[in-house]
Amino acid sequence: MSWWTFVDFAYVDSEESGSTAAFDVARIRTEIEAIVSDEKLHSDVAKDICDLLAGGRADFKLNSFAVIELFSKLAFSFPRISFAIRGRGEDIRDIWVREYSDGRNTFAFGPPEGVGI
View 1 (cartoon, rainbow, N blue to C red):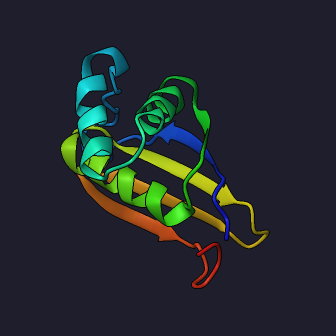
View 2: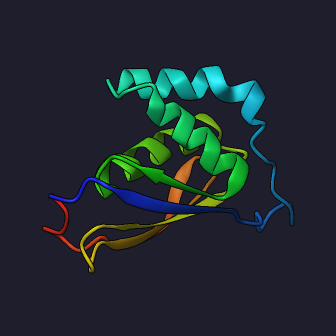
View 3: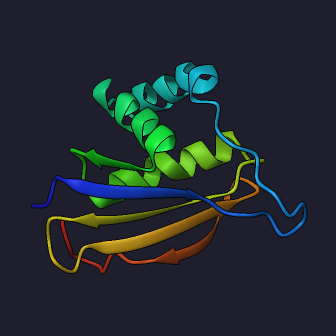
């Protein structure tokens, strides 16, 4: 079972506005903590999300599917922010990408079924 997921983060320009709003990590930390708590995950995961949003790269002790689910909820909570995440798990084929805009997933690739679970 693959439990480490390495994630990259980037903002994506919105086609409508030509620019993207950005996460203010200090301001939304409480909301991130609430999303993590609702998923019954350790509070370190909220720190990992904040680190990713601030620095563009973070490692999660979660499988890829759990990370994707967290960021889907984050996108839904902040629909004005368009962003992309790219991840890879421990398994060589556990690679994936998600893009979010208007609070929903607009592009998805991977992970292959059965990898890392």
